[in-house]
Amino acid sequence: MQLTSLNNFVTFGIFNDLLRRMITKGDLIPLSLKKAPHEVKIKTINFIPGDVSKALEQNDVGYHGYIFSQTDDVYNSKDIYIKITSGKIKLQFRDKGGTGGGLNPNFSYQCIISGGKQSLDGSMAGDGIGRVLGVTVPAAGRFFSGPNIKDVIDKANKISSEMFKDMETNSAYDDNGKIAFDPDYMMDESVINNRICNSVYDYAKKYTNQSFGTKQEFYTNLYKHDQYGREGTRTKAGVQNAILTQRAIAQFLFGKYLGGRLITFFESASAKNKNEMAINLVLYTGSRTKQSSPHFKASDLSSF
Figure 1 (spheres, one colour):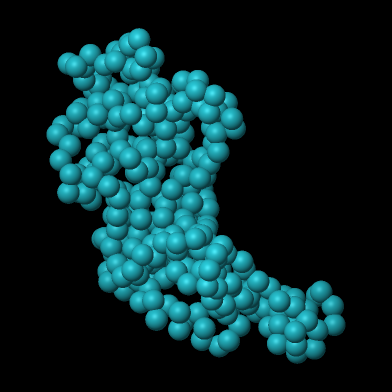
Figure 2 (figure 1 turned 30 degrees about the vertical axis):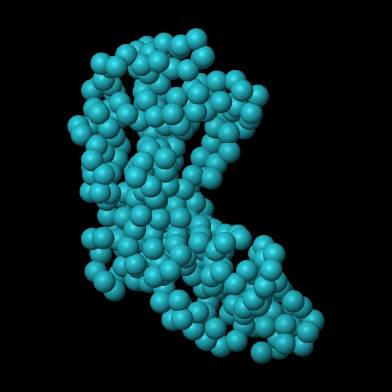
């Protein structure tokens, strides 16, 4: 096809074909640079026919399970992982939002290809996750839509605020400025009697090998955990920040709630759909779909 004007670019396929021709002629070098302090490996993405499918096959990309908590302390991890290979390369689902200097916390739920020693291998945020999942499992697409993720974040913030009030009411500060809890203190049942808290507790029991006791004990221990108290959310200046404390709790709630629901979608799907969801997430997160532009990737040997 002869290209004469911008009106010829009616599809990404035509645009990508032009890029491929320019790369072949040496007129263009689209390059994705990743940190690589020692040996560098150059890979082609959507340039040589079959390069993407070959990479998927060589890495045995598909659904290989999940990680709800990377350590024996479930409170230490606000994210979850979907295993997409038998090795270290995984999909990490987490909040990557900033805090606006501690004054205006915001949230950004993201899917990230992780496992390389030096750098991340791609990311996808927001309702893009829902759009990709929805191709295979419509219910997952609806759940991870932008509006629903925002609704979960809003609810998690509200719950976190109530938790913080209960924590402040039932604790005091010792001489070193650390929160000192009454050893007999248990969280108010009314604060945790909601869908998100119920689900996070159920997911933690179902998707880990840890023992948590009752739901009250589970969330009381969240309160008391060093990472979620004022001491654990000090600013760089050393100031104990109430906003960051509430945000940390909200992060845990919405991260584990969305993550647990994602694991459930995978675990309840057929073998074919499990692999399809995993592969589609990898393709879009790593800019490897048929619609993605052809490019070279220079990266550390450990990267995907």
